[in-house]
Amino acid sequence: MAAIVVSKYKEADEFLRNATLKQGLYDEGAILMKDVLVNLFGEEHAARRHLAQKLFRREYFRNYERRIFPKTIEETLVPFVQAGGGDLADFGYHVLMNLTADASGIDRPLRTREETATMLRMIKSFSKAATLGQLTMVDMGDKEAIRKEIIDTLEEFDQVFYTPSETRRRALLDRVERGEMPESEMPRDLLTILLRNEDNIELPRDKMLKETAYFLFVGALSTTHALTHAMQHIFTWRAEHPKDNELLKEAWFLQRCVWESLRLHPPTPELNRKLTCPVRIKSRPETFESGDLIVDMFKVNQDPLMFGFDTEAFNPHRATPPQGWLYGVTFGLGTHACLGRILVAGTPIQPGSDLKDAEYGNMYLIARALLDRGARPDPANPPTMDTSNTRRNWLTYPFLLDKG
Image (cartoon, rainbow, N blue to C red; front, side, top):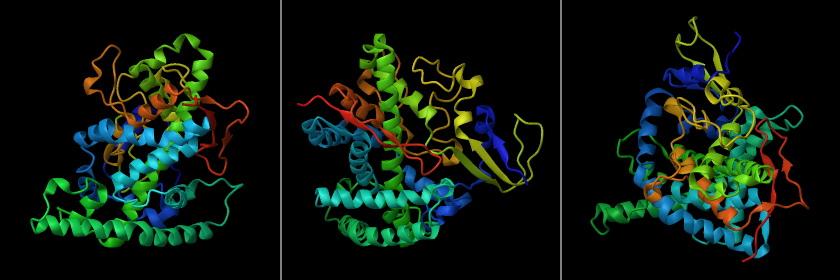
């Protein structure tokens, strides 16, 4: 049976909000992905998502954006400023790994370069589980070897990072239970929430291990790729539209640059869902009885009915669509929508608005910090594209900074 292919925003919106559709994108990477939130279905998915939502609340986003993340950015920037630049992908991995490690509940007691390198290696290995189904024919490689690498890395991650982090949190939970420590001193992270398991859902240790590993890599790698794309577009736009250089100092305009880039570069080229029962949507006359649904993310995010003309081009002056977000369906819709959307992209900032309560998003904060330090492409070292899979991310992106 031929798959149902969706390329229009309205159709994608209706399909993705249908809770009877089952995730079908990560079958190849089941060794890690099978038991994580993004791959669950029905009541099990609803229960796990409800747990995770206890972390992703508005006060959590604001605390990170105002108190924790700016400090992380400044600390991570120091060696890059001293060196007068570096590689955007490398910088993004470092700054976002710290953020996602804290949010996931994985402790980094040493904070050494060696410890950082070890965690980055593991994160990159885990990420292969999400892209196994999208490897190009030219670079297919040995999938079984990749799966073995993921298994080995997961065991190493368990010993080096997960077990010590779990042990510390269980000890803290025992102290709270005995009245020796106030509840307010407990870490605010995903692992703590999973260990507490207030809803008493079935959550054995191996599932908590995989959920934490998934959360760690998806937060660090997806946003790093998105950041590099955004900075490439900003650099190019600034060079080709010098009259907008002053506008880039405005919060609303820089955020729109980030969102426009997110529209053009969704984290995956397609979403795959499986029908579990007959489905009918208003946008199509027929009833779909069974089969696979493929949402073409690039075409949906470039639907002219939603985003106007020249939708394949980067244009931060693009009008906000009549419904939905300027970044399209990049963060998904419905029950599988990304829980960290506000943390990554913020909420809309309007020209002339009061910024006291603004939620910028971590991509904006990083872009602002880089631009304020004179970030620009390194003309002597052009960037290179990763062609090993269909996601088409930047493999390297050398950049220069003003030395301070």
